[in-house]
Amino acid sequence: MTRKQKRLSVIAVGAAFLIGATALTFYALGQKASYFFMPADLQAATLQPGQRIRLGGLVENGSIVRGQGTQVSFAVTDQENTVKVTYTGILPDLFREGQGVITEGSFGSDGVFVADSVLAKHDENYMPKEVADSLKAKGVWEDGSGKAN
Image 1 (tube, rainbow, N blue to C red):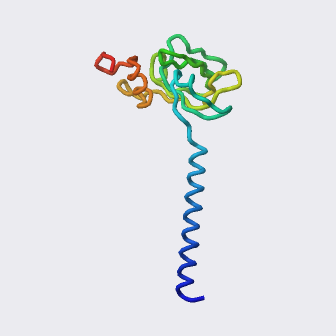
Image 2 (cartoon, rainbow, N blue to C red):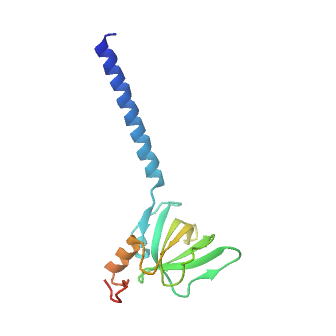
Image 3 (cartoon, helix red, strand yellow):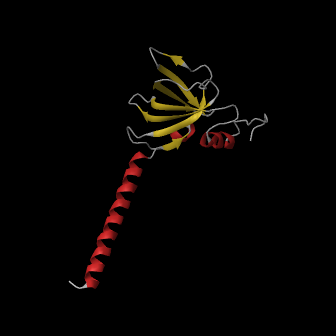
């Protein structure tokens, strides 16, 4: 084998390794992707059973029901549609009715969204960007100035 052939074989092996590593990385990231939906978006969406998604909106007033232990059920709304959510775990301190929330999980066989994580806004002036943008587009959410955007 000549020096030129050795050099080309090393380059070919290196390129194959990089292509394989890139393909595995994209495959792994694709498996962990969770798409963001508002309750109104779920009407048009076709979700696979057990598919993980992020559900965002406002916690509907009067919908929080505490069960045994750390089980909580509530509804997420975008003022058009509402989705019932169940969650078992400790809720964030700022979780309350009328506040922005993003939940991550999947739909159960009964049509109820089973969340395994709940994120609430972290101060008076913050709402998750995806939720704020969707609610602003519908004219529902008001920023700190008191007017709808």
